[in-house]
Image (cartoon, rainbow, N blue to C red; front, side, top):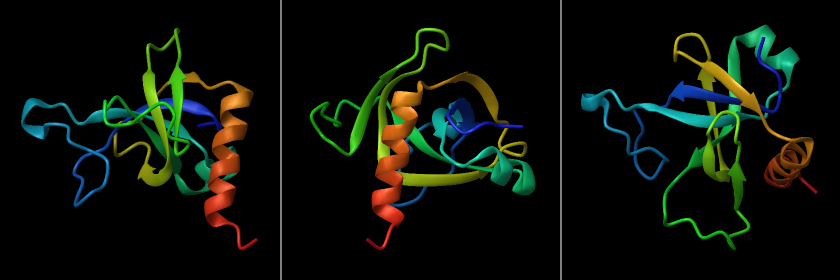
Amino acid sequence: MIDQGAIIYIDYEPHSGHEMGGHDSKRGNIRRPMIVISNKKYNQKTGLVLGMGVTSSSKMLENNSLFVPFADQESGVHGMISTINFSCFDFDSRNGEVVGRVSDTILNKLLKNANFILSNK
């Protein structure tokens, strides 16, 4: 099953409003990379993965603390990880594919940002 910290490609469309998206389903361009932040036990029990999308949008400035710059040589995934939008998808029905894993340093930063959003403290 999918581990926390996995780099995956998944079918992200359709999107709505100001959600991250913009891929063209008519051209079959609906897949995008995502970093899984849910733990293996959750992923296994539900078949879902919760994660943060990776955007290549030039609108995202590298000095914006809400986006974490990221590049993985092995998978070729690079861009800015959005730490403000969590997405939860059915891994199998959205054609999920594991292509790599982030470093523990990146994963800890993402989990810290997620905790900041979710914590009452």
